[in-house]
Amino acid sequence: MTVKIFDTPEVQDFLKTVSGFDQSGGDERAKQIMHRLLSDLYKLIDDFDVTPEEYWSAVSLLNALGGQTQFGLLSPGLGFDHYLDMRQDAIDAEARRVGGTPRTIEGPLYVAGAPEAEGFARMDDGRDTDGETLWLTGQVRDVDGNPIAGARVEIWHADSKGGYSFFDPTQSEYNLRRTIVTDAEGRYTARSIVPSGYGVPEGSPTDQVLKLLGRHGERPAHIHYFISAPGHQHLTTQINLAGDPYTFDDFAYATREELVIPANRIEDADEIARRELDGPFSEVTFDIVLTATDDPELQHRHARPRAKEDEQDKASQLAGTAKV
Image (cartoon, rainbow, N blue to C red; front, side, top):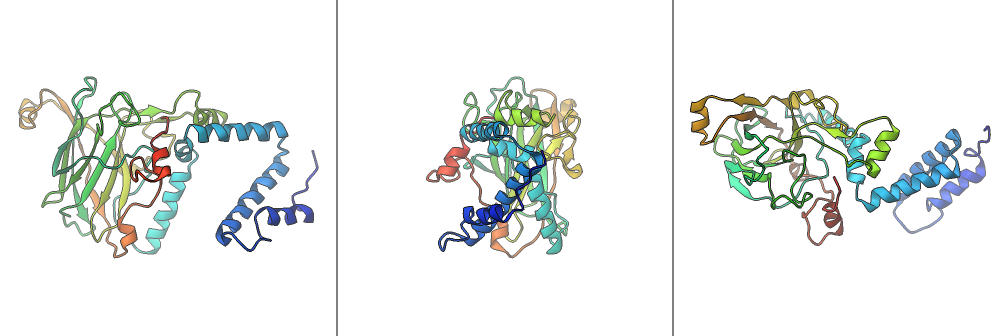
């Protein structure tokens, strides 16, 4: 069709009305953002000759995404999370907060309140018999190479089947979730199991969107981190285990070259005995560098809905209902 109405005065005036420009109340920034969003969508309908059937099909899909609280899963799949990281990287570069470990996406599966330990923690409950033992260790330093004692290293990852505790009711509470406070040399160590990657639920709204784009919904084996220390910028990151078939084909676009870490299999009997383990294990070393900042806001993770972060907050409660 050749019919185009977006640029007509009637539509432009209508957009201003819908966005509340003729109303004295409300939030001016919200009005500006809504006007831009609606303008882009109206123009898209014009440019692609979107039919009523296509429009209402999209509405149904959005309803399904919201009903299953999967927007947090689709968001990284459409690159929003990575794009926000790209912007923050540019902001840090402009402020000369450089030299630290790269950030990457948080994902939707963090749960607040994991048990804390000093220096060392065992993360798994010993019930996942399919999981090979993982020895995870590293040092937190500043950009000058000085160790940061007392840094909080929050770690969470999936089990051998790709499931996360809390969201997977078959796992014990806070399984594979711990906060480790670094020792005097800035070191942390965790005993855990090697995680598996996972895929978005087959047939879910997120899966439907990805399939429309000809894409898969698989993630490689990875381990999430929050790292914080007074006087330093909070870091949200994750490592991908080298060798996974999806390491460089992550639907969530979380892979960064510097964050691909090998898991070295240790079969030496003396090493096994020294760690007080029963057999061969995989060792992963991930050292972390934090940049300095005096801004208290940058020393803490940004606000977003997170499971159990605020039991009184409805958004936090809904974050715990995600189906992954």
